Image 1 (tube, rainbow over the protein chains, first blue to last red):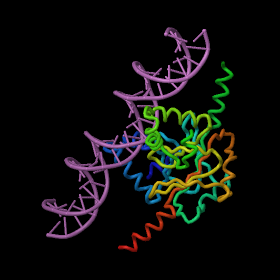
Image 2: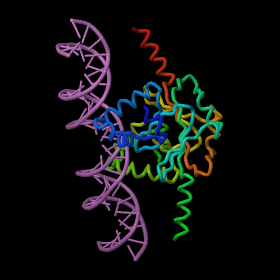
Image 3: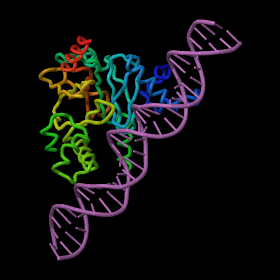
Image 4: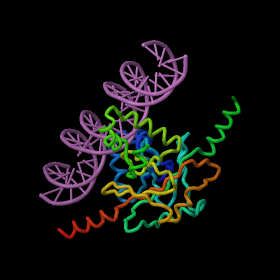
Length: 124
Length: 124
DNA sequence: TTGTAAATTTGTAATCATATCAAATCGTAT
DNA sequence: ATACGATTTGATATGATTACAAATTTACAA
């Protein structure tokens, strides 16, 4: 949990394992899977299904959306302060269905990669 | 493509395979994976990352959101006519980043399963 | 302290969706 | 009928996630 709260990189299980394994040498991936599952069930963390490869986790459970760059894989937070419409997701209703979770996921090419792309094409 | 357009169930590769294998006995899953990937790249179909188990596909590429029931697995379409705010997602901008895809995914328990749940608890 | 049972953590092995890739098949123009 | 490029196939590999039993740790009573 401390790692999630201090690293706002939306890490995968793999990334958490690699980061913590040095100081907690006995740590196993199973424990990370179990613990994150518990966090998500209890609402202490959010699970992001923004790509099909693997799941990402977020210790920030405030209302916000995400943008993932298809090129570099970076996941950016999008807060209501920058995009007011996001505030409306928190209270979305859908008929008589019981909505428990809302995810707004954007994908594309981030500003940084766009610039690199331009450089590359100019070099040719 | 025909299957996708006539079965609005947001099928997985597995489901498409099971459905078509009888009439196209030589069909392989690899072909389904390749073809769907092509459809998604060309914008002819949408890929839904609404759950972590596997990917679902949608032949309807009009602006709409999805609700998936965690209990029965059914994926419901949510059109702007029922939820006008969805229309605003289609044109979301995020700074200087190049947004290519937007997914609004809701999860929870659907109306049908809510009723079954109530029945079950009354029986106890 | 010590013993003990419950809770947690671990590591190995299984599972399952998806990717890889060479061989087989098909379509089409000669 | 032939040849060649494009498509499809199926066997195999990969990699994330789960299952589960054994090992370890914790909490607490004696």
